[in-house]
Image (cartoon, rainbow over the protein chains, first blue to last red):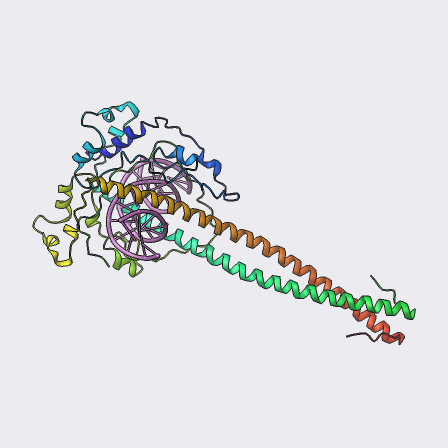
Length: 184
Length: 184
DNA sequence: GTGCATTGCGCAATGT
DNA sequence: GACATTGCGCAATGCA
């Protein structure tokens, strides 16, 4: 009973029918170029692929198979599949019919789930911190950058002053015919 | 806060996910030193609040109410509440028992859900782009910073050289008793 | 194969 | 009331 979802998925994916939608996503992914219009697409889980490929994301794609929630399963099935359509039961598209009988009621399943949930929380926390750090770093670098810019301005100006002084002396020196033949 | 043990709790169902290749990329990118510890959070959806508030995340908290998934609801109830404990039915904590009859089967519900799903995808895409931009900005700033540092080194050195020259000339000038009384 | 880490996704609560 | 955010759990997948 717990595989119903999977079946639905499979039958749903039947629309795609191409289990090898292949890369395509790796293409636009480089974080160095990045185009504004349609961000990094990642071949979601449905048939939105095409849409996204065309930068038409966020369009209300067919919600066919993603129904339910604990509520009446039967009614959902009725809602998403006409009562006579049992095609999804056919192993046509490699339905995970016997994909290891890991009942969702099994203790092992729960243990696995719980472990993953913990890992997920941890991972996300890590991600949040990383993002925060990056933001702070960017801000910090920006500040430092301004200071450096200012420093450069000061140095540049000082340089000009010195050069001016030097040229003056040079002129004075030549005018006086003094012995001043050092560098420059 | 929220009504403890949201009573019915979500349930989800096996989500989709096509057999096609998934993204997986854009991950590594971090170059940051994240530390392991707690995390910011607020009122999630369950009763873990306390744990996390104390920075004790990731501990295998009681999975009590989150069990199930499309699978047997009855068995879950039995599993998570002893058959005689119906306290959760009491309006003690204002259980959203009748929190508006928005049947999950209603068309309106599905419409709402689908719209939210679209909004969520959009929002996450936006977030991803934002993060990427921040990373790029940090990198860019870092590069610029190095260039500025180098520029400063050059200017500083040049300054020293000029100053040296000036002092030399000054000495030479005084030695020669030449007429060099410009500024400085 | 086992176990944790990542990631996309939908759900629900909450914010705007 | 609609859309935007955010935390969460699920499942697939990456990875060691």
